[in-house]
Image (cartoon, rainbow, N blue to C red; front, side, top):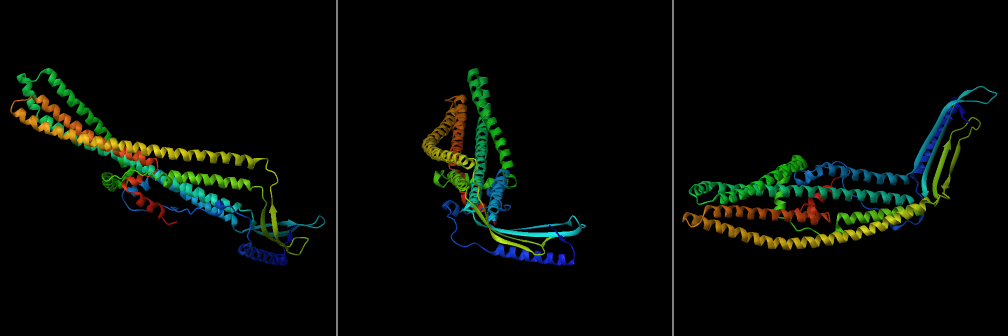
Amino acid sequence: MLHRLDRWTVRHLAQAVFLSLLICSLLAGCRTTGPGPPVTEAAQTVPQVSGPVGEVFIGGGLTAALFAMPQVRAAISSTRAARLQVAVAASAQNSKVHVEGSAGFAGDSGQGMERAARVSVTGERPLADFGQTDRRVALAALRAEIAQQQARGAIDAALANVLRQFGKHRSAARTLTIIDHYLTLYHARAALIEAAVASGVMSTSDVLEVKALKNQILSQRAKADLARQVSSTALKLALDQQYDAALSELRSGVDALAPPSFEIANSVAARLLQLRQGDARLQIELEANAGKPVGHFRTSVTSPTFDDPDTSLFAGVTFAMPVKDGGVAKAKIAGLEQALATLGHEQVMLEQTSKLAQSEWQSFFMFYKVETTLLEQRLSISRARVEALELRLRAGRTDVKTLVKEILSSAQSQVAQVELQGDLLSQSIKAAISAQSTCALIRLCGDIATTFVGVSP
């Protein structure tokens, strides 16, 4: 019941509130002692989660462009949100104080109603929960690190896409330069072709053959120009304000391209699998201990009531224990164990994928070395033939058709070299993606790691 709201009551209410807050403050500062319940190793070992929790501010260049991309910013934002959940889980270990009050009218049936008020202050602190809170904190930390590794994967995927577009742009630009050079050589001999046709030295069939070769080159030029425009637009959208600085870094990085790394044990993908396995194990532990009692140290102070002039005080231990959950925990554990088995299969698949990628890369690189030598010899022979045919044409010992065909053949050989270089970059990216180590190709991993981990919380 409520106490009559007179001066005496107000004074005692104030004293009760003061006493209540004092007791609850002492409760908040106290800590339980003793060894406590056993906690598993997984719950004791909370991952050290580092990385961005605020906005990322870095300098210019390719790294800055990567961290400014929407998909990367979204992944970093998810990491920040996941890290904050660790503090939420850890707050369950803190003391809590609850104040409740009421004011209104109270009285007996035979008496009139009078104004009255009541105040109650309750405080409690976790005493024992068989390590469940520790497990929840460890689980939140694991999920924060999972989000962090996913953000690293997003950065790697963004870099791989930028490298692909840069490779297309560079190959297309070089192809255009080569074709334009050889078309200039061709047009410089156009008068000779017209003279040969006029004098009957070249037949209509020969002229059509030369035009067909020229049209083939022009078609190749049109495709290269389209690829250059499309890739240029993609790069400008991706790199945005860092376009010029990032493009300079890409040129120097690709010119000194490093071989892909196949260290799957240290890869983002492998780390993610390990973390997901740890997540499933911790969830199993939580469900396995869900039926154990939970104890709290609790104290409460209640102001005098209408029929009791004394202040009520309680201090002691409370506990709660679920007796039967209808098989929910058992069903969850079965599902989580199946998820663990699936993750084991995924780990085997990851290792096989890495081995296959390494084998494909080694096979391609052997082909690349052989093909590079053959194309160099082919281009050297073609250039020597052009020089020899020029001399023979001046001496009247060959026709212009043979010279023009060799000029266009030289163009094809040089374009093939450019395409082979583009294939080298494409295959390197494909191999690096298997271990999510694209940054190693252009030696950018250090800058990315410093930017990602070095941001102050």
